[in-house]
Image 1: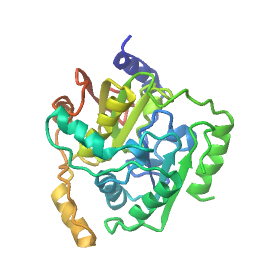
Image 2 (image 1 turned 60 degrees about the vertical axis):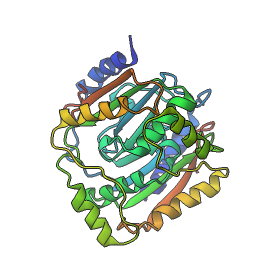
Image 3 (image 1 turned 180 degrees about the vertical axis):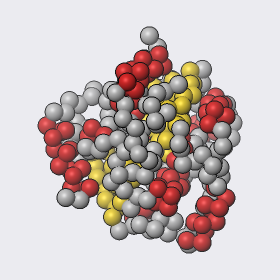
Image 4 (image 1 turned 90 degrees about the vertical axis):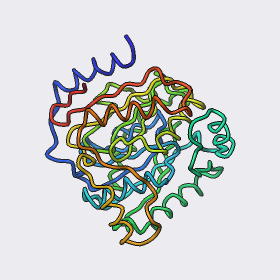
Length: 159
Length: 159
């Protein structure tokens, strides 16, 4: 069975026991930003239930304009007021050479990459920068409750 | 207890039973793009296990440059070769007026919003556009296995 077929089969089992949530506004008024890394399951690892939080994910939990756009919609249209940013050990963006990567994409053809999302070398420092990037973003009405975390993919611990 | 305290408390329980995955490469070689909506739990709803897939999320499952950047890293650095894009019913981007929103952010101060991520009015059409945006992106080496889905937040069904 292909991955796509499996997704649909598993979804039938899920849907049979599904209880719809009353609306789109996250119950805990939380938006959580984390990495796309396959080893992170925010619902299980951070004890969030369906309906609790907006969850935003990209390569590196980088605070890009797309993340800030999504956070602004989350706060201004759907009532969230707290932000958690969860970076993790063993991240592919640790030591990543974005300049070389953009050159690689440029060689691959199509549009020229427009972003500037450098990798990092110090996880603590990167977490501080991410929190600061969100706290200084005037598009967001709620910036008092912004917390940065590190998830250890070896131990499963958040700190 | 605050939301942040609860996350840490729940994480202790999770970490006590945590089994580390061998590495960062997704087992099913899948990258899944979906919306940040709180009612979507990809692991439960689509039968994905920890370690199976990169999961990318933003407002609307919009195929922005940040999503294409993350997909390019996913395929070129971490070996994924299939892409699933999951839009959903009741999405906040359905009928969203991005131009008015950017003007609102502009009034809020700080940098001027740089993106152009319009809302949509037809979910089927939006899903087709999203698949086409990924299939036509030359930054991605693997574009044969790209599937678009719609998740119904009322029934929990994927189609």
